[in-house]
Amino acid sequence: MIISGKELSVKLKDEMKAQVATFPDKYGRVPHLVVILVGEDPGSVSYVTGKAKASEYVGIRNTTIRKPDTISEAELLSLIGELNADDSVDGILVQLPLPKHISEDNVIAAIAKEKDVDGFHPLNVAALWQKQDCVLPCTPKGIIKMLKVAGVEIKGKRAVVIGRSNIVGLPVSKLLLDENATVTIAHSRTVDLPSVTRNAEILVVAIGRPKFVTADMVAEGAVVIDVGVNRDPETGKLCGDVDFAAIEPKASVITPVPGGVGPMTITCLMENTIECFLRKHSIM
Ligand code: GUN
Image (cartoon, protein in one colour):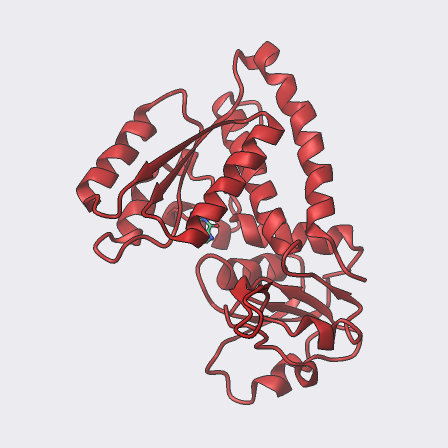
């Protein structure tokens, strides 16, 4: 079975659209998401465009602020400070990566926790690991939603996550653990990685290398979640971290790239923006 993140996203966005349509009457306005893009990286431009499109679809107000990559860290922090203080702004997202002269840690920490729709703020991360109420990071949240909709039982399963980034690997491992999977976190330096991944009933791959996972690394009947977004060096087309054509016949469930995890990330961003808006109106 191929899980279409695209299809599930449309369904979830339609539900949110109906919900947001009731907000002007209830709260006097719709949620407002501000996205900051520094520089011109084509990948980032395309992500930010996707976020604006999804906002428009759901009925969320979107402001995209584009800044040149010559902006100083102080200027960026000052902009974030203004948005933190602006009561009409519910969510703030700074597209990563940032130019090298700007500290991503400083930028993430500067965003008000209440407006951190990415769930990257150190206080949100701490809350996640301490099982407290928090904003869940979008990609891990989207992955768990997809597994549930596909009817995959997570409880009691052996899950292997390849990748240990703050954005995906670590938080998705925590969410799987919270669903009572037994989780192994592997990475590019894991010794004899195939022997680890062959043991996985659920395999999540977030390593950022085209076709990194080959058929011999996957057990028959495994659930395979591909978080990679790469360019195939041969065809130039978008591809995941998993050799889809070789693994699809073996997997019980698999996500495609594009059209799998990617759309779910953006959909969860919409959900997080609504969540931050509703928290502010303190009815959650
Ligand atoms: N760059 C790649 N993924 C993400 C994301 O989820 N949020 C932000 N802010 N930047 C990213």
